[in-house]
Image (cartoon, rainbow, N blue to C red; front, side, top):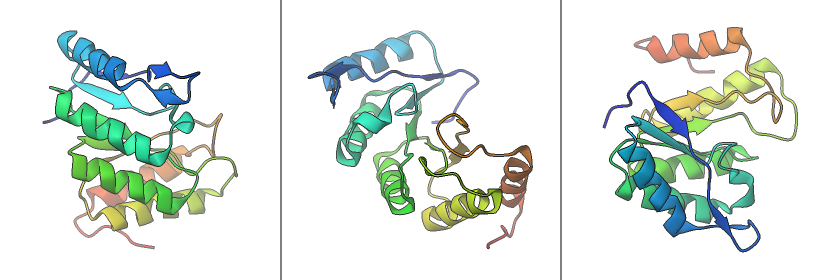
Amino acid sequence: MKLGPISVAAVTPRRNLGYEADLGATLELVDYLCAAGVHGIALLGSTGEFLHLTPEHRAHLVRLAVKRSRVPIIAGITHSTFDGTVMLAEDAATAGAGAILAMPPYFFRYAQTEVREFYLRLADRLACAIPIFLYNIPFFTTAISCETSCALLATSLSSNPVRS
């Protein structure tokens, strides 16, 4: 499935005081958004409050949503560590997500060279298995500068991507 012009950032319905996703309600939301005519659904971004779910629960939710959805799922795979990000990205690719949504690791601030290296290493580990969307939420993590975004885009357009 190809992404179209209208993608929405979905909330994650909760139960049990907010620490567990309501899988049934999430799938009903996927059905509703598909019926409303969206072209893609972003799950588990900041609107989806990914921080409140375990990586295993996040991967399970993406698998179910991909199976249910009639439009591409853009899976939020942000994690506080590089290895956690890779694990969630690989799970999303295996599940059949249309793309992944990744912000730099949160909590600490990083230099732009480190942000660039993070994305290049992620792309290298995924070996083009799934498109990567840069997720720039400066309030929660290091901002991705325009220069860094342009440099990353230039490597993705090159026939021989730059590796650091």
